[in-house]
Image: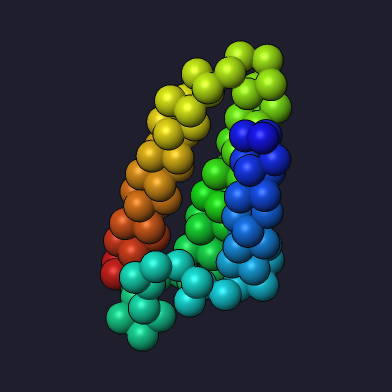
Amino acid sequence: MDTVVYLIISLPFLGLGYLIWQKGFVGLLAGFNEETFQGDVRKVAKAGGQTAYTIAAGLIICSILTLFIGDYTVIPLAVLIIGAVLRMNIQMKRIEREGIK
């Protein structure tokens, strides 16, 4: 049952990753304001899309590993999600600093 839930939850993240990265809908990123941002919006879209794809891939891998290992895959999944979000925040700060210069 957990496998199906993880797979269903990964689908919106795949869709968000596509919309943000490929279509450039950076408005889907929480707290992002295009008017006040001083940087390359395409780089922000790439960072946000990669983060959504990373979370979706983690959920898919977690769903498969849950069949073999059990519920012990939740902790690495949480670490992956936190790491992906931190990485995106660091990239956003770097992109904004490059735009200010």
